[in-house]
Image (cartoon, rainbow, N blue to C red):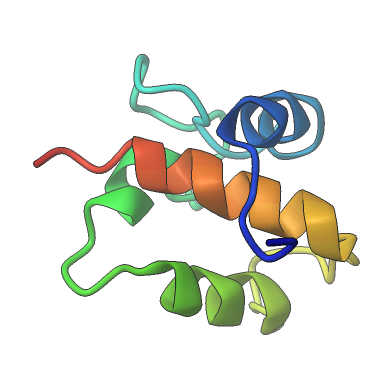
Length: 87
């Protein structure tokens, strides 16, 4: 199923592309850019699902650069972010 991501690849992508602004690992949970929400907080936002993350990653944000994320990379990053959800 191609719309299921690989969390390991998503973590690698996040560290390479997202970490200059966002805290992408569980610790530390403070982002380099104070306006960029840590991935752990995003993952634990009530109602956050893969669908919600897809919308979040494909909708321009005023404080976020308009990134063109390849479809499989997006699936991988979403899979990774969902692993940060604390049950």
